[in-house]
Length: 230
Image (tube, rainbow, N blue to C red):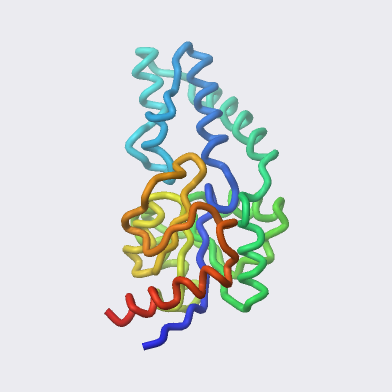
C-alpha cells in the first residue's frame, strides 16, 4: 500500500517562532520582582500547553502568602514578553520548510494552542502568513492539546483524512495530540527541551535545519506507508 502525503500541519509556538523562552523569561522577571526565583525545572511542566501541571499564578500567590493584583501583573508580564518576542526571527529552518511546502504543492495547516490573533500576528510579521491554507487554534475547539481536537479540526478544515497528513511538533503534548488524531508525527524538540526523546513520535529531528523538507519526506514516506498498512 502506498500512501501519499498531501498536507503538512505545523505547530506554531516553539516550532516556527520561539515564544516559549520569552514567556518563561517574562514570568521569571515577575517572580524576581517579588523576591522569588522561578526555577527552569519548575517551568518545564508548562512547556507546550496553556493548561500545564504548573500554574505560575497560583504558585506565586502561594509564595507571597496572599492574593495579587493580576490585572497589573499581567500588563507588566505581557509587556516584557511582547518585547522579547518582537525581536525573535523564525526558528532555524522554519521559514524554509513553510515556503518549500507551498512550492511543492502541499496543503499547509497550523495547529496551535494559542489564539488565532496571536498566531496570525506573528506569521504576518515573519512574512509567512501566505504560506498557510488553514489555521486550527484554541478559538475553534473546546479542548486543546494534548487532546486531539485541534488536529481533527485542522484535518476537517483542510478537507483531508489523517492518512493524508503529517504533523511537525516541538512539544510532548503536541506530539501526543497529533498521534491521538491518527496523524504521523515528526518531533522537532523546542530549544528549551532539546535532547529529550519523544517516544510517541514516529520520527525525530533535532532541528528543521537537520535536513530539507524534501529529504524528510523521502525518509518518512516508507515509515508512514508501513503505519497505514499495519
